[in-house]
Amino acid sequence: MTVNEKINDEDQLFDEKLQKYEEKLVEFFTDIGEQKRVNPKFLKMSSYLFIHKKLTQKQIKELTGFSTGTISTFLSVMLGTDFFEKKMIPGTHTCLYRYKGELEDLTSKGLDTALQSFVPSEIFLKDKNNTLKSLINKDKKGASHLSQRIEEILDIFKFYRKLFPEMMDKKLEEEE
Image (cartoon, rainbow, N blue to C red; front, side, top):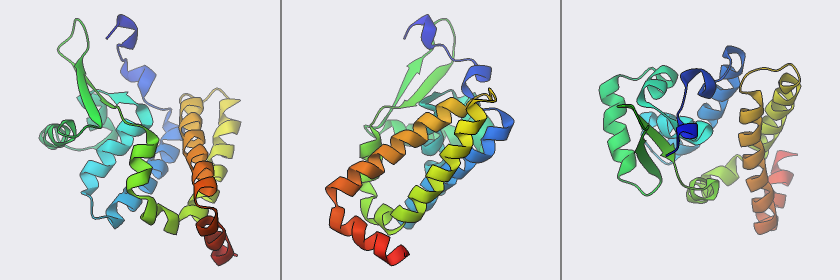
């Protein structure tokens, strides 16, 4: 890890006004995971790691409100998977945790569940992304980053639309 990869709490976390969008995105991921009976605390932490790409324990605590013990326990579980990793920030006693998988890894495991809410989710994300794009023009901290992450999710939806056209068409018909 290079000096450029050091994280500053100010640089990584979003502007207060954008936190509600971030929370909605976390809620979106959590709702999908809970349908598969995944622990809500695990879902919340992994969602924030996915959105921010990398976080310290202090940042996870600030975002989730979980105790240090809870965070430590779940980080240990996460590190036992192939999707998360831990690296020391050079010159500190602080570790950086990151989601190292691809969006496809998350979404393919929850495809059945996700397909059930595909159209409403896509509409919701497009609407929020349009709002974020207007906030980018107002120089709101974190708007560009959060918009980029939503764009990545919408790109995966396009991929699913091509991969499962019959299923997607059926879902669209059901929504109309």
